[in-house]
Image (tube, rainbow, N blue to C red; front, side):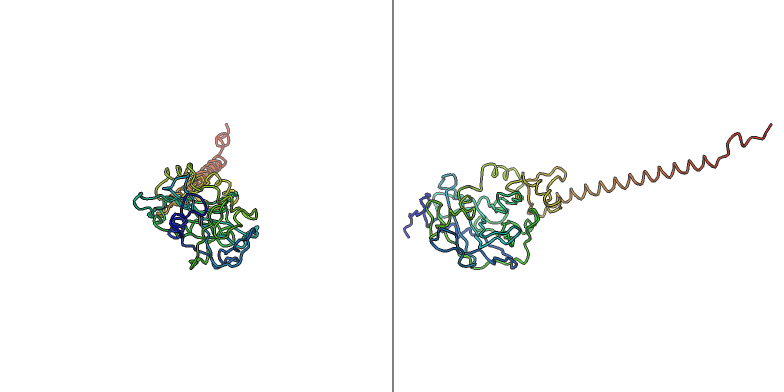
Length: 322
């Protein structure tokens, strides 16, 4: 392969794209309980996506970020034969992405990851997608470990987050997926490796390939958060999700002492949100107990006074007749 060949016409050589996709591919944690087993391989050169093997194939995309040559956005797609969760359906397109920056011009193949993004129920009311600094995951030079929920195939940057959506995800019986091959998809207008099925209307893959996961508002918000935070990509949906989930404590961070809903998880085992919630509960319980104790005391005193008055002889009755 010529070093400068760019078969998808996006400004990045095929060699560079393949090198980056190999270097930064995540370690995938899959459930033994998934009815679709593993991500699927799809038929070469077919217009309609047709799964031919559930063999753990991963598909990749590399594109210059905002047209720049020193920043690249990679998407790693785990594509499935079917979604076998609630309201299941044929075909499922999910992904994880990373924003890379070239270290310096003298070492063109040395890149570092800035931010990672994991899609979970993207573009739905139960969107639990997350984003964080690569340093939080220890994934600046390589891919992080990513947990895939069985059935619905939502992606999570931390195993604990798997139960923090609307309640349908559980990462149980998880094992590392072995020997996953990565195949470069190219671009929508110039598919690579026989991926003619990219633009099929049977799944939302084309929309995911068209857009960036690292919008300026998201990056600005990440920079404002603590350096240990994994953030929700779409925090505005969290209150509605709490209502769907019934206000379960799994949606911590919502209405707990005014704590922002931005934070999905603080990796340093920070239980501030839960502590605030517990403190609030304890305070409320204490106030309730104090109120009940006070009312009981006041009631007892009032009753004793009434009894004393009733038992005391009246003045008229206590005086001898004249």
